[in-house]
Length: 362
Image (cartoon, rainbow, N blue to C red):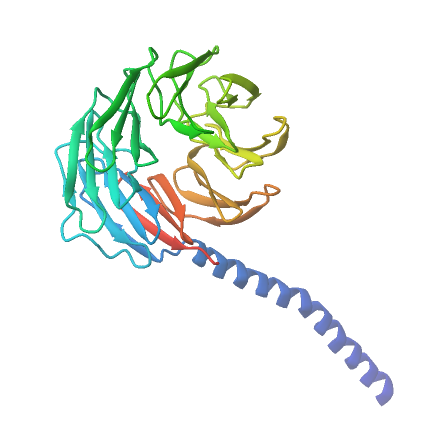
């Protein structure tokens, strides 16, 4: 073998080694990228610990997080770092298992068995308290300086937000299952005996009662001027609030207990078997459905064109609202039970009194 042939063989071997090394380098870069993404997915920008052995239920209002704890405490936190705003939290011998609502500088929280508290947002001082016939159905509805609260005994109460004076109480005759909604100028609530009722928001007069073969344990959602409520039988009902008639209904795989959300054109909701659905509000046609996991504990929450869901009690997923494409996943949040999204943050609440906050990229 002459020198030229030997040199050519060595050159070919070096070229083959370089070619073989390219996929190894690509694989290495991919693994590092996935590792960085995984670490980022499990990161928490701040955390906050409430009283031990409490369920935490957060809500986001502007640049604040209201944290309700099940053994009777409410804490007010700054959303950017989790620092406390109030000198001392509100403490009452009650059970707070639903998020608070805020309007007109007032925080409204409902206790399990009938107590309603109004607290000043700036410093946590009590403005007023009153009592309704309980147990009450979750977070109150606030509209036009009026607080609307549904009771599982079938009554809807309206209180003035300024002083708690009672404006009306209406007995719907149905055991109500969740928070009412204001839809096209009508207060709409749904009950466990298949009743969907519409009330005049000023007088409380019952305008209509739509009966279907269903059981409702789900809050009512406002959806582009319509009312949407899911049933225990796995069917989403969309109702015209002016006529009190079902516009259409959609059958799905599991129970419907989480509140739906809407961007005005589409309705988004999750069932108990881990599916996320998007429905066209004009005709009820399914735009997409996507399996997120075995169960969805909270959500969807709609924020700037994306949907956020708490899945399998341990991870939060971000889905593109337009097409159902999975965008991001945050993992490792064990014993998670609640979720709030807003102001470029998502806040997870746990069964162990933890709040875990993650900043979303703008």
